Structures are given as C-alpha cells and as structure tokens.
Amino acid sequence: MSEDERLRRDFNDYLLLERGLLPKSIDAYLRDLHQFLCYLDSVGVKNPAYFSSNDIEGFLASAKERLSPRSTARFLCSMRAFSAFLKLENYRDDDPLALIDNPKLPQSLPKIMSEKTVDAFINAIDTDTDVGLRDRAMFETVYSCGLRVSELVNLTFGSLNLVDGYLIICGKGDKERLVPLGDNAVWWINRYLTEGRERKDPKKQCPYVFLSGKGIGPLTREGFWYRVKYYALKIGMAKAPSPHTFRHAFATHLLNHDADLRSVQLLLGHSSLTTTQIYTHVATARMHEIYKKAHRRA
Image 1 (cartoon, rainbow, N blue to C red):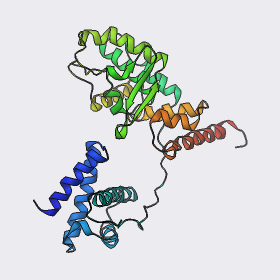
Image 2 (image 1 turned 180 degrees about the vertical axis):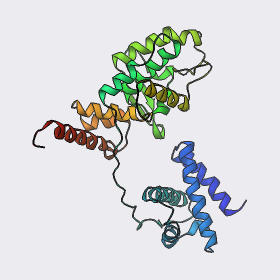
Image 3 (image 1 turned 180 degrees about the horizontal axis):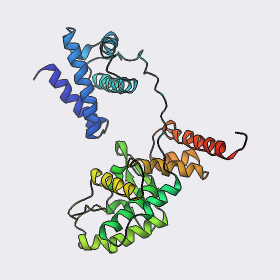
Image 4 (image 1 turned 90 degrees about the horizontal axis):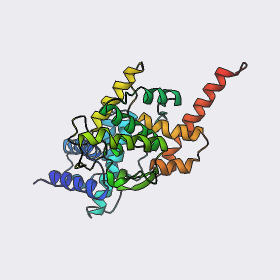
C-alpha cells in the first residue's frame, strides 16, 4: 500500500471514529484531499504528510478559476481536518494552515415559509388514507420539533415519549438533545400509530416510527423529499421548498413569537450560538419587509 493510500484510509477512519461525520461529509472531505494529493504529486512533493502552507496557497492559485469562495472554504475546512489528523497521528507537530484565512462568504439567508404557508401545506394532506395519516404525523412532527430530515426518518420508538410529549434526538456528532413535542404532533402520531401504522406493522417489528409506503422499513430521506414535492404541487407552490425549510420555519417562527435565541439554539441542537443567529437576520428582514409594505412614508 502506498503512502497516499495509507493516509486516505487512516484519514477516513479518523473522520468516522474521531469526528463522527456522516458518510456524505466524509466523501466530501476525501474528495478535497484527493484533489490536493494529486496537486502535490504534480509539483513533486514526495511525502504528502509534510506539505506546507505554500503548497496550500499554490493549490488554491491553480484552482482559482474553478473554485468559488464557498468551495474554497470547504476545501480549507477539509485540509484543517487533515492537518489535525496528521498531528494526532504524530506525522507532524505544526499546523501548516495556521496563518491561512478562510475567504469571506456572502451571508445567505435561509428561505422561510410563512406560518400561513406551513398551515396550508399541512392542511392539504388527505388523512383518509394510511399514507396521509403518516404524512400528517410526519409534517406535524418535523415542524413542531425543528428536526433535520435524517433525524425525522431515523426516529425510533425508543426515542419517542408521547405521554410526556418529547423526543430524544441524536443529532450531528452523536449529540443527544431533548425536544418538546407539541400537542398537535402528539395527537397525530397517536392516530397514525393506532390506525395507519397498525395496519402496516401490527406487531411493531420495525423500530422506526415512520414507515415507507410499502410498510417494510423506515421512510427514506428521498421518500420524504418526494412527499414535500407532492404537497407543494398540490397547494400550487411555484417551486417546492427543500425539506430543510420546515426546520428553518420552526426556528424563525419561534423567534417571531418572542422565543429567546439560546432556547432556539438548544432546540435545534446547534453547538454554536453563531449558527442560530442567522434566524434573527431572517426575522429582522421580514420585519423590514412588512414595515415597507404597511407604512405610508417608508
């Protein structure tokens, strides 16, 4: 096995076991590393573990035409992780990226559905069918709790407490958080479990709460996205929102109704308050929009 192959394999294990990253994130880190190792080989660097800050800057200069600021930031994030891995494994004791700054990125605000649109979306679900009962329970839950789609589809009975009304969610980095479950969500989940789901899996052999249409396993992320597009079309939305939009709506609507930022951070499972603060900008932008429409001298 070559040194390059060994580094890739060990870095993969580091990202999985030490960082607890998801497979898609690991793939992205490894793609960035692959591009960088190819560059090092092209400029004659013999041992890729001992690259320098000049090598990083050289790579960025060579890829300037094809890397956007956001791609550059992601590449540097991957390389910082690689540098931390090399330090942990005693390949080196310095940080070649210590003096390299991340590019300044334009702040992009998440797209938010209004409360009226969320209500229209949820009320468009036909609950006379088993699939409709499941969908109503799912969308009530994802909006009630601000879940990521992966957290929703991986929800198990062991994490669900309908008596006291809460979920125990294992989020990014295997961090657990307790999230209150609203009364509407509790009611619809109970109805789904006793009617629609009971017919699909009467013995509750599948540990996941929300079953696929065939009832033989959990709904997938792709399956949930399909249901989002289906109901968006049904209520006449020009473009279907991303599944993540319900999480954005949850956070922004809480802030619009005077929730404090720290509480929203805990409910979302953000490790940093800075990540949550984006929603204050969304709420403020919405406030200015309303003001300009309503005030005769705005």
